[in-house]
Length: 301
Image (cartoon, rainbow, N blue to C red):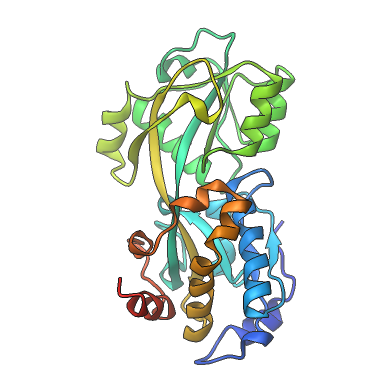
């Protein structure tokens, strides 16, 4: 599914020391339709097109974080979203640079409400989707299953919409999703089927000891109006990434309009409310792009 549209043009425009913004062509790697990356990617594409006068970036549907990182390092995209845990160990990953820390992703383990599943250990013996291959969901799901030694009866690699459809059709008992809140595909699933979100409080300490990249948070029941009440889950940071070859003036312009267009991004997805300049510089282990640094210094971060 790797897209190569306008790659020669984009590679020519987005290298060197300076550029003319109206000539910039961008392919943006996002995620599955119905996910937050895809919604924010389209919001950014509209903002950059309308405010900078560049051609509207081509927003590409992908499997998610790992897929996006691979596209960036292989020059198949110029901008992409990724979770922090998807970057480590990627060949060519040293070329990556961050424009900003974006929203945080929340792990959402969705189970059928008619199953006797109360703890993470109860996933053993069930039919579970761990997300699409090369997605951030797959990374965090495998991290949890490894840390807890939980072994599902059947482990499937299904994307978000495919997981929701399989659960509707009775072919799946549980699935992992990592994304902003709320996620549209899960909201729609709750209207069609009684589901619950699994509380991870019983495995939180074990997981964070082995994978300190992850934080924790409480998800209120009001997010999806679920009867199970608030749940404790894992949180992972999201970055907006480019590569070191992007000219400084292009990177600075993209970051500037990211923040100036924030009200429009909130309309695309409410997760954009949490994007702000002071936390945007927190992109370890990825270096900020020099053009992004220039913007944040001007903003006096």
